[in-house]
Amino acid sequence: MVAFMSQTDTLLTELIKRADQLLEVLGKQQQGTGIEPPDWAASVAFRYRRFRNGRAALVPVSHVATMRLDDLKEIDDQKEKIQRNTAHFMAGLPANNVLLTGARGTGKSSLIKACLNTYSGDGLRLIEVDKSDLIDLPDLIDTVAGRPERFIVYCDDLSFDDGEPAYKALKSILDGTVSAAGANVLIYATSNRRHLLPEYMSENATYTHTADGEVHPGEGVEEKISLSERFGLWISFYPFSQDEYIAIANQWLLSFGVPETLLEAARPQALLWALERGSRSGRVAYQFARDFAANQQAGNSPGA
Image (cartoon, rainbow, N blue to C red; front, side, top):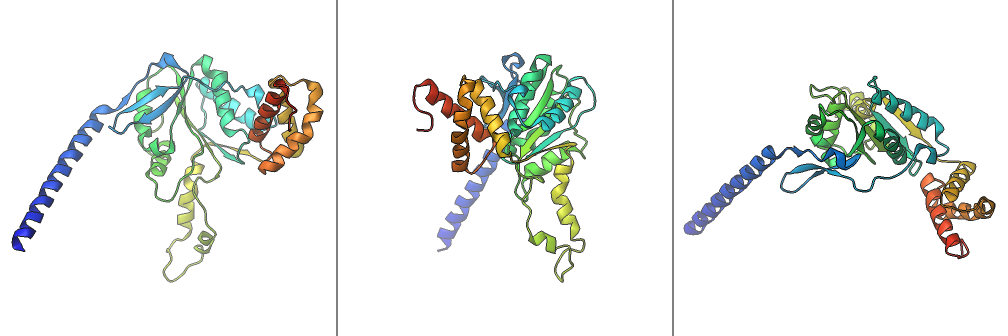
């Protein structure tokens, strides 16, 4: 029995030693890697990627979406706000980080892509970052510091669960750390959650003092909304009315080559399409227009 325990201890010691060696090697790899700068002339948009070996790189996007600001209908107020902020940024004037929130499929992501296409000729570049990689934001900002271009760091569908490390990293970069974003970097993010974190009805109850509750119960709720408040510009999106949905569908139908004489005939089918999907969003209107135009061009009866 003693011999068995001694052998087990020896194996455990060897495993721990090998694990420490592996962690040391991985640590050295990651420290010496950094972010590989891309060929900046290869594209106007890049994706940040961190690979399993610890290497990080900015990968050029081969096919950038060709969305234009004129393609986006029924969101004129939102379009004016983000275009003005981006124009100030490109002119070297003070500009804000932007949080676009609201109903799904209403043009939040499309608006950012359209801004890129509008200002890319003036030196605007976009870097898309996944939420899980936001902890690398300080290194990313150091990589583009000193470049003549201006960069939008873009995070789509941003939301966090309690305790995620990326939450703290983004919060610090936006405001409140020595390592702040450079003059040539803004952060644009989209989210279906206004405050980016889940909020619960039970949290309202914490405002009343209980025997085992917090001494300052409101501070927990304040912590949750502090990240969204660090975005200087909030742009809100709302569900479209029926008339707005039809106007968007008509615009996409015309862009796909459907004759104007068919727009009235397409109206009931567009409404049925939205009813089946439970949404009158711009995305649904775009999907309907693609289907209708394809059927019309193929000689099929649209909606059949």
